[in-house]
Image (cartoon, rainbow, N blue to C red):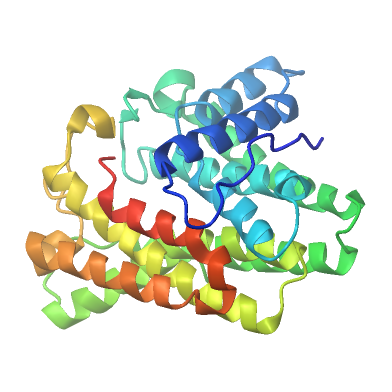
Length: 313
């Protein structure tokens, strides 16, 4: 199911209202997600999957899939199935992250978490279902005109690696077993924190941007530039999450407690608030420098990098 991305990207050089543009793209992605997740039997499973998918996410990862394709010369509408797949995987990770055995959160984005709404058994299975069906959506891109089956296979390989033990799951494991009050040296904590963020957060952001680019037939040079960009904005994104956990509006964040209160290892707890803000800004500047190869086409990804450190939630 591929729908038209009705709103064209703003022309290079024009002022971008990125928040509005992200919202427009999110509506397109949501329409497709709604089609893919039409309620079937067993209804409880689809209700739980839909509940978490439509719980108000920013759709950053689908947006990156679309941008990866667009900046490499492919119409965004062609990669919509893969864009939705990355949102499936992101949402599954949040469902499991909230479970009592993990972060034990009651609320996300101001709503009851899946296990509080449906019970732990259904929440676990909803996450499993989203992860499993995500790869079916990526495979669906193989029948879209202009996309080679070889490139779809490359994306499946990439996403499985970045979402697996050497990626997001590995980061989640270390995060679950790490605390700010352990008796490790400060240097050991810094290394653990970098590992957590590079794997738990950066990996899926990187997979999203590169997936769209690979489907578009990106060159090695383009993929290298986008990989560096994604690594920098992914880390900046997580650092700003740590900052917002301290100074952000809890109502906008949809959170009750804070990572610091829960003794989670964060950039703010290790480096301090002001250093964390400066580091996020430095990473954003490095991310934008990585885009030189794209010339004037880089403007949207540059705007996204700036948005990451300017956002309120």
